[in-house]
Length: 118
Image 1 (cartoon, rainbow, N blue to C red):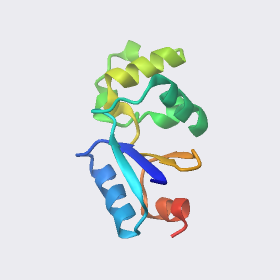
Image 2 (cartoon, rainbow, N blue to C red; image 1 turned 45 degrees about the horizontal axis):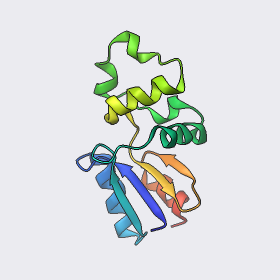
Image 3 (tube, one colour; image 1 turned 180 degrees about the vertical axis):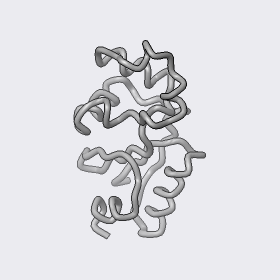
Image 4 (spheres, rainbow, N blue to C red; image 1 turned 60 degrees about the vertical axis):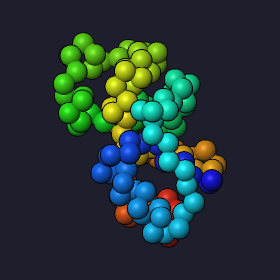
């Protein structure tokens, strides 16, 4: 597989992304990151590649809004990874990892067209 999509199986955005990939015949694997937790080192690498934890975490989610205020300001990489291990739904979905290791988050039709040259 040249592309791996990390997400949650019942997430509407992940479903749209998977349908788009199927429609454009982009070979891919899907990983449910709640059932198959992503290692802390991988989460950290994704955050670094995206430009920081703020880009990886979905702060507009209900999960984020329901966090206690003191949990919303992790001060270190281990605190961020612990938070995401505890609340996998906080990861912005889907996370797309291409064969070359490039990471992107989220789904839009135009964004995927650019990402996959379609």
